[in-house]
Length: 476
Ligand code: COA
Image (cartoon, rainbow, N blue to C red; front, top):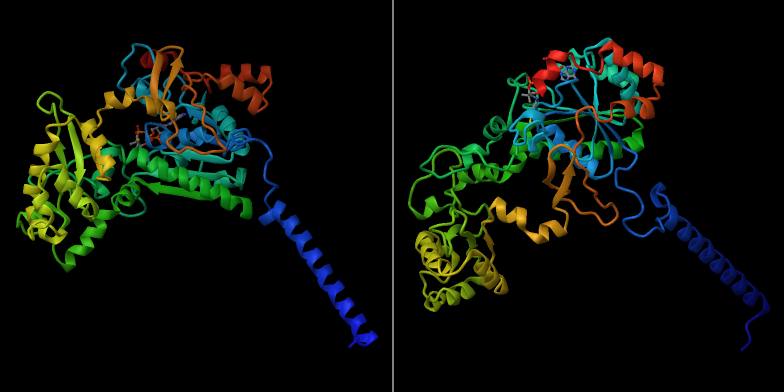
């Protein structure tokens, strides 16, 4: 039966309305795809050719020694323009520390100050202060790791900086946060001790131990770099800068957090994965040193490998992960352990770990650490060769990925440095050598700050960017 004319008309109108709504929805979806959250349209340039992550960000780098320079070098690797301010004639103290090549900047300095420009300014000279203030107006971020109060003593208080440039982010590394030790000067090992790392590192029957990895200095530098990137992002919404502070004690504790985890677990019983439990040695009130015990839930230890008698690094870390226990038993010639109630299940193994590891070691001692790696990886058994720094320096895959980079330096020649450990698909790091002291002073004064040639001559004559002869001689 035919529908009445009116009903058909009504239906057509509704359908037209529906399709119009669909068209509007599609159009707005297309529009928002290109501009979602206020972002620009996705770049059509090939990945890696659309600039660097921090391109356009200008860093006033007032850092020295290790913690601050680690941070600003990473920002430089990410593409920021890093202008390092150094004391005329002297520069960053590390230029002359642990010097291996007479008259050349040390590796201590060169490996922490790549991808930066160097300007010398006496920050306590009135003219020097004027230049610094111009740099503050020009830059986005000031990074410093002076002793507590040093920046204020230069007249660069947060209030003053903020007045000169409300958008400026002021990032600081200090040894301690607010509290009883806030005025202390702090170096790496002090931070390792105060951050809980040293008391939990080493063997139970030995003294606290510091680690070779510079978790206090470089570790805190990494934390600050993260804080700066977050502050830069927040600034895109608020338009204003902020203070970013990372205390070395806090940075170390953040890296040692699993030990604070264990401190709390102690209240509920012994730490069964620590070998001291297997050895029936009672726990005290604080987390003990655990030698080479694994920090996770799977027991592990360092085992000798073939050649250990001559080579101090012929060792492998070996984890007896529960999931691959049967493969381990077969590998080391103990298939009976797969069903033996003393060995078959992880809790039964805990009191026998020392015996288990020494049995596995009988096997690892017949293989080089690389053979152990090859054989075990095929079976999904987690192991790791103990690599010496020589082996790391010579490892082709680390060179291929840009993790270890060789750079050329005008006074010291070729040297190795650690490139960007963070790889990004659209921001490719190019590692550049560290600058000579004051190498870019004139370039920054003229091209960045717009001083005329006559003004630069006046600045030079004032002594604000040059060192007294006495200091120059001392630094040589
Ligand atoms: N022009 C003029 N003076 C300058 C200058 C410049 N370009 N750059 C630095 N100075 C001055 C400072 O103003 C300070 O003078 P003041 O003491 O009169 O205020 C002086 O140089 C020394 O700075 P300071 O930071 O105290 O150096 P230090 O060698 O005595 O101490 C640290 C070094 C690392 C212990 C200390 O800076 C510190 O505790 N920093 C914070 C924590 C940290 O980063 N530690 C790890 C370093 S890897």
